[in-house]
Length: 188
Image 1 (cartoon, rainbow, N blue to C red):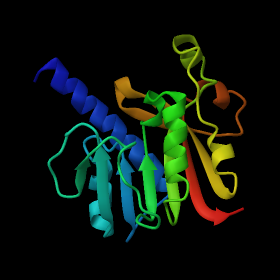
Image 2: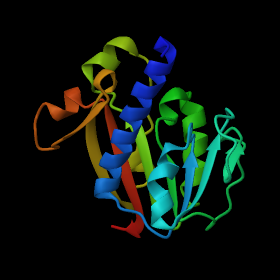
Image 3: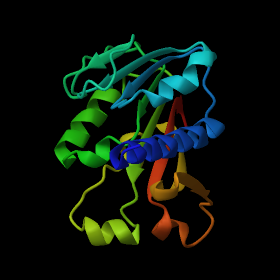
Image 4: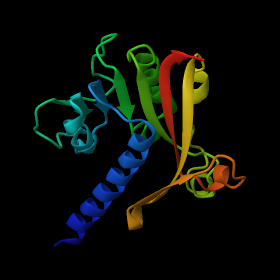
């Protein structure tokens, strides 16, 4: 097995563990799900047995499967009420701030039940060192009218592990590598 293939397998295991952690908090069944930046459509594997209608969108043609749309998420046409739940995992971290804001403008009214977004933790000491000028979107401000659950995760991709951190611990803010925002349509 090549080193490249081993790395892909390791990353796949890590992403599956992250999805499992999200779905522990947010079980999904019988929903219309949009997965923006779906990559290899790993989320789809978790939703097949849940009778969900899944649509994956990615600009790279990773998959030639049913319900896959090859498109940049900035060009993908969203219609209001078309999807119950929108996932945006590992996507906005790779965009310039203006593109992040465009995506937030487009999705904020185009889900009927929930939005699940991951975003790097700008307070993490490693990110501050590696990316001192990187800007995050203030998701709590964008979705202030909705109920938001913020989950702190420590990702350890080399070992394919994801650890959920308690928000009550003082060091969580500095070691969490990403936050998962579960944004529900019902208002506060």
